[in-house]
Image (cartoon, rainbow, N blue to C red):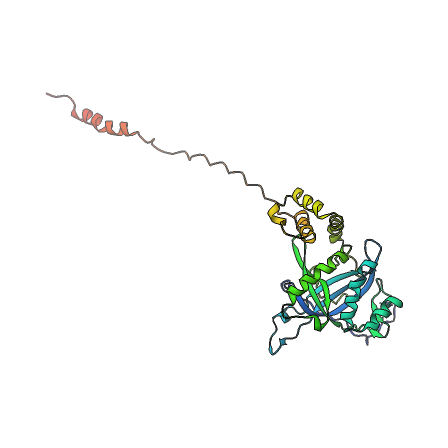
Length: 310
């Protein structure tokens, strides 16, 4: 009996893989303190470079001396992709400023020299100039919104904030800011591993784009290239009524159209055919007499008992 010889040396001193696993409901949209747990550079379907990352919710248990309700969502992974394109320059700068806590040198190092990466496929970002990306997670504040794909709702990062940008009504304020960046993300693909949000245990695996969103995102691109009037016509053709999209902007109407076109309807089960009624059981023994025969029977019997008279 021999021993198997591995192709690598390996070492027992290497730290075992670790990670957190979120098992709960999807958090509501809003502003969350998170940590960037994975950040890599990959190609999107348009062959443009793209930052792909997951930001894991990491809220303190208490805030201002009070219990922090957002801490119940710690470990949830908010997936975000940022296309590295000219028209998305402002949004990438927003992300880099939030990631580096406002260091403008990081922006210069990003655009002038590019980030340092490892040899993985796709490559993980290790540093931007002298600014190192800690593998344990980089703190960042994310404004997240709902992403609805075929009835599956998850959070997607829509903006990145510095602490000074958070207001008491941050959700409303950041929703207004979303309108300024929506046009910059029309080519963005959603990259999400459903059911494994916040999972770092497979962090050494290749991060593949999630193909289930490709068709919807291509349709979104088509719709967003149309004029507002054309989008409204498409909404009507999709079965939406005027009341559904009256007063909404183009982006909101596009979301409604996609929800109609890509929401899987539950197939109605055919109604079961009624079972045939079982035949009436056959009676055994003496047949039942009718009421008339029953009434006539005593008289007939009386005549038989009377007999002849003398």
